[in-house]
Amino acid sequence: MSFWSKLKQIFGSLGVDMAMDLGTANTLIYVKGRGIVVNEPSVVAIDTRTNRTIAVGKEAREYLGRTPPWIRATRPLKDGVIADFDAAMGMIDGFLARVFKRRSLLSPRIVIGVPSGITQVEKRAVKDSAYHAGAKKIFLVEEPMAAAMGAGLDVERPIGNAVVDIGGGTTEVAVISLCATVYCESIRVAGDEMDEAIARYLLRTMHLEVNPAIAEQVKIRIGAATPEGEEKSMDVTGKEVRRGGPRTVRVTSAHIVEAVEEPVDAILDAIGRALENTPAALLADIKERGILLTGGGALMSGLDILVEKMTGIRAWVADDPLTSVVHGCGEAIEDPARWERVFIA
Image 1 (cartoon, rainbow, N blue to C red):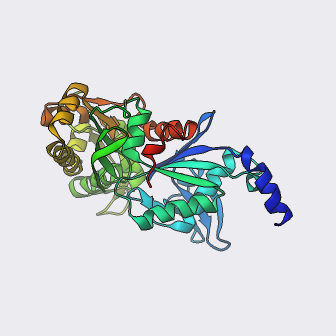
Image 2 (spheres, helix red, strand yellow):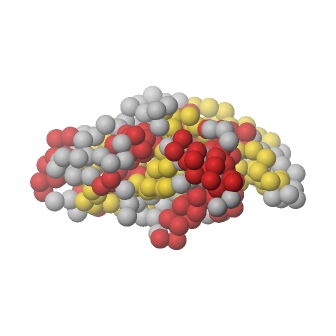
């Protein structure tokens, strides 16, 4: 065994165990005993001449659409899973470098939240990225389970809990009891699909071309799933497709309701299927306890109202829906023995 291997083995016990929500839109990292230390966009910028990572997170997001040909700014995850292995590895490595120093001497255990519909190939890509970044041992947890844990639901008892986790790339709908998913469906319709729907709507109805980042800002500021509630509006500047020059239009929340109707309907349909496939005893529990909405998509105004109208069951939004998954993964890394049952084999 080499000197460095021996030294790494000695210092391995000092590794900083952590949890990670490796999301399509945002990556969050929770360090054992410290809480959330990273909450940044899942974006990486790479110098293609040297294959060197030059920026990650918020800094890299500023590069999108603004780089010379030799710099590639990209989101390495698509639909909740790794689409570009090398870019994802560089992004994870960049985030981990912020968390602790002398990483070559430290080999942490990491709990990672993944979509419930993840394939074996996709699981391997997630694990390989984390191993390359220096992890000693990796545990995977399905995102709906992690979100339920992070939101404070009692998932250990024989009680039915319904969770709808609307992320950037996927929406996870699950019924949970006894630390297991009784029913789970993952659809690749979520925040990104809403952004694309808004961009298509502006192009179709106002002849205005905007990039996905602008569409996302529109969704965040004035997005709504139902016309009920306060009417909001904002000015949006993009490219006028007929003349090619810049143009500013006034967009209202009513426009967004119309724009996102299709992806919202797909999410409602998934919730309906989950309830149809839930055993009667657990359905009675859900009727009493309500349906938990988490993830960034849960923040869209009026979505909880639509869910309640469709199902007849109260829908409620987690206190901090953007961090529910990483907090749940954090609970698991704080006490792995207690939560062994939630880890994916």
